[in-house]
Image 1 (tube, rainbow, N blue to C red):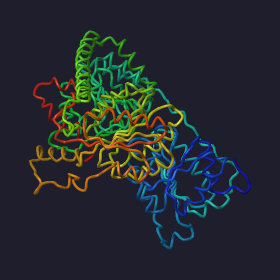
Image 2: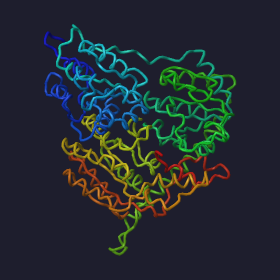
Image 3: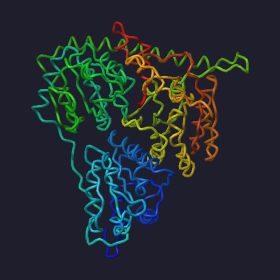
Length: 613
């Protein structure tokens, strides 16, 4: 699209339009007004979604990108705006989410004079981008935008940052053709020599184990991983705090995520001889490490790696085999090669498989028993009216899973309730890798903003959107609810409100256990305490319906009511007052670890409740 009077801002929006992007998210600033004005032009068919903070705009663009399969776009203000996005820019970078960040810069003639709010924006944001650039003249815009969208749509999928002095948006570039971005066909099968080496290593393994990363979910490779796990009789772990559900959680081979400390990972991987890392992006997702205890991955294990990003293969530790290629295209060749390998012991693999099937059935029975227990509490109306049955935090996920079975359409779940994250992962049903969303970055305050973009992206896909979030995380960006209310986004928000930073309290206990250090005085700063946070009252200020639940007998009914509200097209917030002292425990997830001698399951389950440090 071009004409003699095309302005720089039109070049920008030609590329956004050609990419099929329907929404851009931002906080209005003077420098961005020409860009925002373009969203009022019907030929671009792009809506502007205003937010109350740049990190919300960034998180919303991140959610839109993940749910739509297209790049997200955030329009942010000069220096303070660029600084405000860093938390979710980091989350997008570590979670491989493509977002185009367009930052309005001061007038080009002023920059040398250090004007109000002016700064080196590329240096501010560039560390957490795939490419960052400041436009130096209007004529650069077509090249810069073409390059930006080429990079956004080629692995690894990460943010791109473009700073544009606002005067260039109102000039006409000397360029005749723009709007189209190069598309690189990137689903490339791995090298045959590497595939053969991977087959040899895995076929010879006596006790193999699979470690999956977000690259698996990105490739939509559930069926390929399942066939491999069944062939090998191999346990399946996920990288800690994965941003996708990288393996079906209803299959027995799935043991949840790696634990977030060195000692925990050593316990989980003890006894295995070969580790196959598939699409792993997060290699050191732990909070406690001692060099004297050796590497995170036990050094005696043979490591085999498959990824479409060479940086992630053997990044920290030596991989005996590294295969660069598309996961979905390459895995079937590895699986068939193992099946036909003369050294593959199928009988031993079948025995491993049968053992995993047995333990997996026991785990599922335990989860069913926990749901039965919660149903019996819900049905118990014999207690005095003034008696409250406290809610254990993990019961929120169990109750949600029970209600899910009655719904008329699937759900997409955003998880920012780290202390119950493992139960959210196991108890609910997910029909695709992207039906679950977290972030690998761990910067708090992502899920309320991301729910905006996800809800908009899924508006026509007949799905429910549910955000399960801890109270500490929610307080970062409750102002996201302004946008949710303004655009009537039907999201169910379940706020797990225990008035403390639970994962940090557990982390403090680990520091005491491992380092022998105790705080000088009681850590009051990890308990939110007073004043009590009333998320229902906060919801009312944004005109959003809500309720408070503090009795386990009312939990399921509240969630059922919440779904009725969002089915009518409105957002709804449930402030769930959980009791940290509640004694109910969630069932064990990692059943293979649980059967190892000497493992303290209470300790392991506490490790699973740790979130970002």
